[in-house]
Image (cartoon, rainbow, N blue to C red; front, side, top):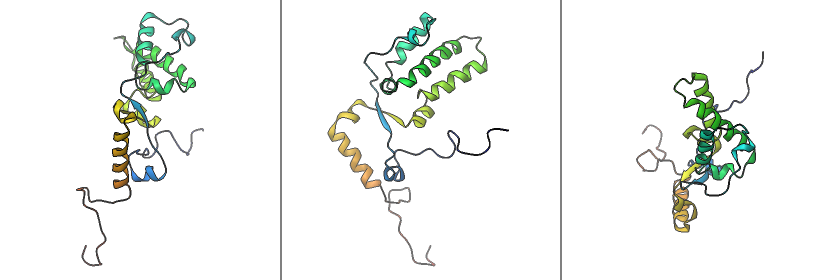
Length: 167
């Protein structure tokens, strides 16, 4: 019987790139610009030699998303993106089975095309200005530092210890 115990994908809470604990462990989300990727990308025929015209259209549109800027740096993802294209096009069919739609959804998660997939990959889509504007970066760093270790009651007021019997 296989599959006993051990860590599993998505088990437990995912690290929050905005928490003080993640800052302490230097866990930061990779920022992807909302403008998307504008560079060259590999031809679909490298991965799906029998690709259809619709698959080619979907492939080209995916390579203009913010996630594509990360895929191009990680060639090992290209095949997963191609498989996502194939299963997504199949899932578009009104007669598609639940298994086909599930396969497309799982691949979407793997390549970061869903909110859960973005979190799983440690990616965050941000305004183009937020990644290149030094003033914006300084503001973000100041907010991170001011909220770093302070514990608050949720209303912004800092929590403090009270003497025994007064709480």
